[in-house]
Amino acid sequence: MTFARTRIAALLLPIALLALVAAACDSDDPPPDPADAPAAAAEEPAAAETVEDTAEAQAAPADETSEDEPAPDDAPAPAEEEPAATEATEDAAEDEPGPADDPAHADEEPAAAEATEDAPEAEAAQAEETPADEPSEEEPAVTEAAEDAAEDEPAPAEEPAAAEAADDAAADRPTAAALLADGSIVPPAPAVPDGPLDPLIAADLDRVFDIDGVDLDALARLGGYGDARVAWLLSDLLRFIQVGETSDAAVLAFERLTGTEVPRGFAWPLVTNWLIAWDLPAPPDYVRWKRIYFEFIEPDWIPFFSDPDADIDWRLLSWGGVFMDDRQPHQVDWPCIRGCIPAINDPAVTDAAGGDWYPDERLVFGVVVNGEARAYPKHIMEVHEMVNDTVGGRRIGMPYCTLCGSAQAYFTDQPPPGFRNIELRTSGLLSRSNKVMFDYNTMSVFDTFKGIAVSGPLQDENYVLEMLTVVTSTWGEWKAAYPHTTIVAPDGGLGRFYPFDPLGGRDDDGPIFPVGGVDVRLPVQEQVLGIETPDGRHVAFPVAQARAALEDGADVMLAGIRVRMDAGGLRAELADGTPIASHQAFWFAWSQFHPDTFLWTPLS
Image 1 (cartoon, rainbow, N blue to C red):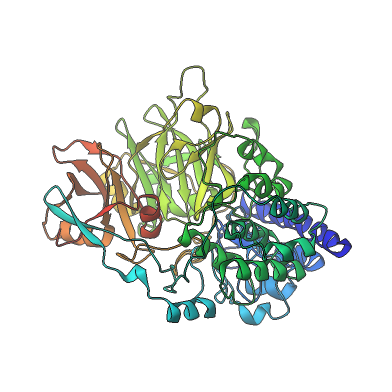
Image 2 (cartoon, rainbow, N blue to C red):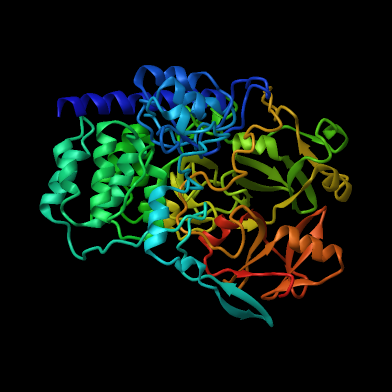
């Protein structure tokens, strides 16, 4: 017990240091030269591994955002979002970027803090948070355990989706997924009991979730009780303690409870993917234990965990490797020295002619409000992931979830009576690889993808943000379509430098944080245009296919939604021409938040 206590102090405190270092690079200090800075890992699980080595390992590459990428299997050390215990060696840090490695975002990168000496061999350098050999948050690595499960069990995910008609067009709806994003098969789900938790289990959980030290004997006993619901808490423990005796004991307990075999190394991404895919219920009083390490890492999360009415699926909540953006209003132009992904408020803008610094072929996220057009360069949004701005006389908030490939925009100037305008910020938490945003003024959490308040005073008001369309286009096409547009200035008005590729292709190969089973109708990273219809249905249009069909003169329509070209990008309208809000996202993200979505194809 003494050793365990020492270990907890050694692991968790360095995690805080890691996030601080990462955040310093992330937000406001002038980032290093782009050539030296790999991309920010927006929500990369940071890998922090040894107390002494952690600071060195992650202080070095301050160029990658570490919010989204889990640590490698053999070297448990993703660095930014992963509550990694800070025990990774310097070698692990070299193989996978830690939170300090991403200049753009440290906040969403899981820190895997405990890579072993073999870590360098086991994991390839991750652009954002996921080493090649380690199960990544968004895209879990194919493991031997998963392969063994595939031999013993058929893959239900391969079952063809049932076709459903939508306004004269057919759309497929998937059955329960049994494949992970990397194509590996999910092993059979364990049986779970009903009813209250055995008092013996609760007592041992108290001994394990003790900030003064983990009782290893109690941890071992958890694996023998036969209540697989406890596996969720073992996953939470592995998010923060990723290597060493405590991690090994947690993995062994997980294996005993679930009847699985977990490959050695950084286990958190894979076991969490399995848990999400199984949709196992959480144990009674789950938040009572889950909150302990989270609130130790970031006390500002206490209001979230303390809301008994919060409509949050706590099972899916994970650390993105960074802290909350809690800067006061007069500090929003200051660097985020605590280690957060800093929102940018009211960025400086120029007219289209003044935007000649931005290459025509590079992407922008464009909005039009009351006839006023504005373009937000993608690389600046990759660093800040949130902008609060005024366009067309309206106040808007635009979260950009780099892990989901989704820029969305909401009107924030029509709060409930008696409330101030909404000011959106990044919390440093993730839900199935989607950033968790909150309102700074009320500490209310929002479902970022849907704009629904799920905790705090705004949830009590049943408040839902009104969405507006975001068009993803190239700068050249956008300014040609909207010659009077403005564009964010090259320094954002903050006097800082933004590399054109802060993430360095981090998300090119799939999700790096756990997302569970995937909808196999499209590749996980396929960009789709998503729409919610007035009657509550959800429709998705694969962007490349829809654009090609439109260029060929086809009418692209499904479920009463018609898609048309706008400045080289896509926007949606109802059959009568009434505009309807739309935005792009990776398919895995859209389909996991809208599993009943209708999918347009060229044959629809």
